[in-house]
Amino acid sequence: MFAHILNACNPVITHSINSNVILYVIHEIVYSQEKKHLMMAVQQLHSPTIDTRLEGIIKLENLGKTHPKYTWEIIEILTTFVRINSPCKTYEEVKDIVSLKIHPDIQASLSVISRSDSQQYVEYKQIDLSHTDLRKTNLCEANLAGANLYQVNLSGANLSGANLSGAILSAANLSEANLASANLSGAILSAANLSEANLSKANLMKANLYLANLSQANLQDAIFDGANLREVKFSGQETTDVE
Image 1 (cartoon, rainbow, N blue to C red):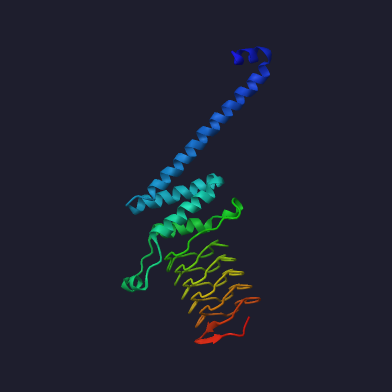
Image 2 (cartoon, rainbow, N blue to C red):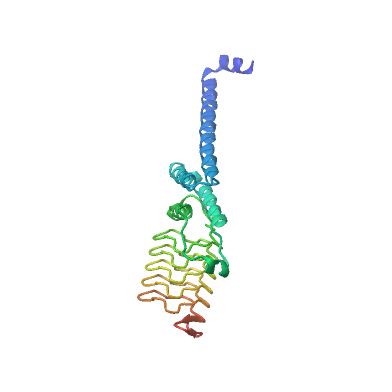
């Protein structure tokens, strides 16, 4: 009855209300479809077959590109996937692995995570890949600024040109990693293992390298302005006076 009276009194108002209702319904339908696509892609990550998991990862990346509002949710889904499926291994477990094989779904997830500019859409969030085994992965020019990489194993990984500014890399294993031209300004590398790493032309301004191991690392043209180098190990020797 109210709608009938309102229509008789002012058809313009009724038209406006109906239009708003229609727009709301359309929005809810579209949102529901987007969430459905998101959940379907997530379900594919649990598949026992690698091809299905890779398809799910591709769908998540495409959804993030089409609908940037889901960017951070997708990053959290993929970082959780990596943490669960590629956790850090014990020394004994590492010894038992004769030849390390990088799982394609882990590499694909890392590529999506490192390509996304999460800070463009969500502030005060942190990519969390702590306690993961990422040995020999390809993270060339990856954007992992401010990421939590605590105790991550990146031994032999390709991080050339990567943005790791402000990242937490405490107790991380970066031995033999390629960090040429990487941005490590302000990064926390305390007690990190950088032995035999390639740090040529890397930016380590104001980085914290307290107790880090830099023995046999390539430091050609690396920038250490303002870095904390207390008790850093260089080529078998410890330095306690450099700051």
